[in-house]
Amino acid sequence: MDIKVIVLQMIQLFLVIALGYLLLKIKILDVDFNKRLTTLLLSVTTPALIVSSVLSTNIEKQISEIVFVFIVGIVIFLVLPILGFLIVKVMRVPLQQQGLYIFMTMFSNIGFMGFPVMKSIFGNQAVFLTAIFNMIFNLLVFTVGILFMNYHSVQKIKINLKQLLSPGVIASLVALFIYFTGLQVPDVLSSTITMIGDITTPIAMLLIGSTLATIPVKEVFTEVRIYPYTILKQIVIPVIAYPILNAFIRDPLILGVSLIMLAMPVGNIAVLFATEYQKDVALAAKAVFMTTLLSIVTIPVIVALFLA
Image 1 (cartoon, one colour):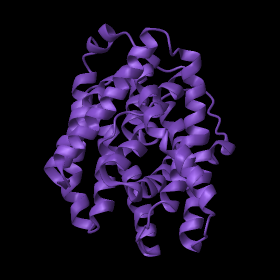
Image 2: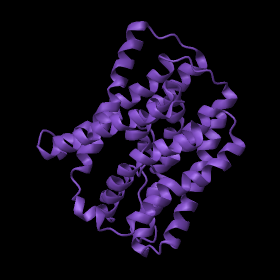
Image 3: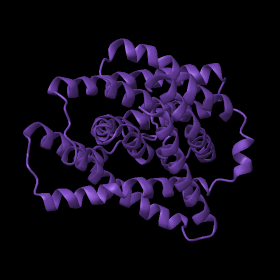
Image 4: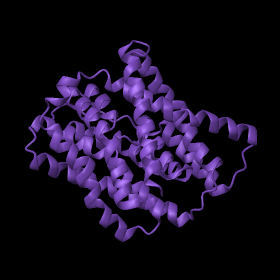
């Protein structure tokens, strides 16, 4: 794995993020259009990217390995809230913000940023494996995620089971079906799905940039607690996790995807959930901004240290 290529790819992604930031500032993009872009990404292009990952690549993974990826993903998502709880205690986070910090630690940006970054670093096979992690993500964010978002809250919690069957989860199930059955999809349909999936990366990066542009920069850098949290999440957790993952995971691709997933910045969904459940939306937005900005540097560093 050529670290120079990875760095160049991350720089390219960062430049597209910067373009999205600029486009909102000069009002070519706006908040309403961002919402429609989000729907397009979540409902159309990302599902197409997931399905295309098994159509355009010869994935050489046995059923036992796919099951192993599920197990790895479940274990990671079980450990992350424990780490989140330790972080809020070490940082002495105020009680009303503790649930949000645990949520942000558990649910990284697998959807918008995870798929394109994994594809850039490891190729289409990584997209397929990331889809498995994303399935677990979706199943947990609308159940356990709601519980953490309302941690120490007296607010009545409502869990909508229909949200578990998101387009991303459905696409992941379709990809697994195609993989296990060896279903042959006509070339014209396969190439169309792949073409639609390929626009996910630029749209996702533009959307991240335009979303970051809605956050007042001065307010981000005055949130003192964000600094140690970003270091803990983006650097300390992946560094500590590597020797543990390496002891149990022999497949380099599964190891790489698992580690980079832990290095992903806070997911945009933290802002959406904070808005929905009337939590600290500004804090969630600042965390997304800071961790996303730092990930442009930390992800290539982690790749260079452990995966190159």
